[in-house]
Image (cartoon, rainbow, N blue to C red; front, top):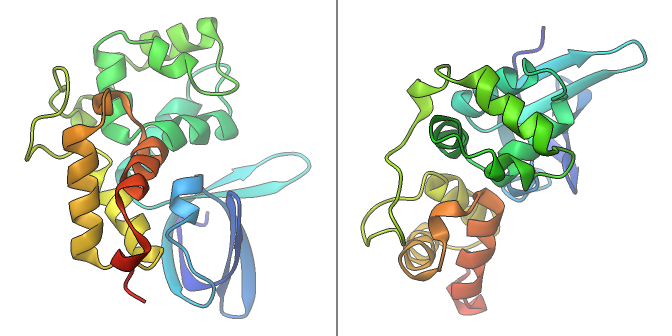
Length: 206
């Protein structure tokens, strides 16, 4: 079992990163937002799930233990494969997945490519009571100023990885959380796009 990798990112494109560890390059499938935090030549650390199939060995990588645990729980649901589970985490944070299940919000899962109404409802039923540890307080309407979005820290990391200073990145995320309509429904990628929309090239740390 390969539980984690720490090494040098030697290639990243789309949702695939190649991490070189001891002279061996491991192809790791990650979410697009996670991929944006990786830079060629930089040291990276990812928690991983190794999926063994008859015709392939696949590594899926995650920034946090919570994301990995939710990924494993999603895969336990009939009809949800590793790519669909990663697709969910590409749209929603671990806390948002937990809150969707707690609130019987199957519509949140239907927005993910490859997950239909029946599977979305099955996720709600199968994971009921199993995600309490990941739940965050649900936002009512627009997120009030000073209250962090569950994906805020991931987006700050992504923006810093793209070259912006940490203070500029945090300010952009705070602005997006405070001012974007429907922010409480946003996954990591959507919040990243919203934060990028508030930044100017002058804010980059280059």
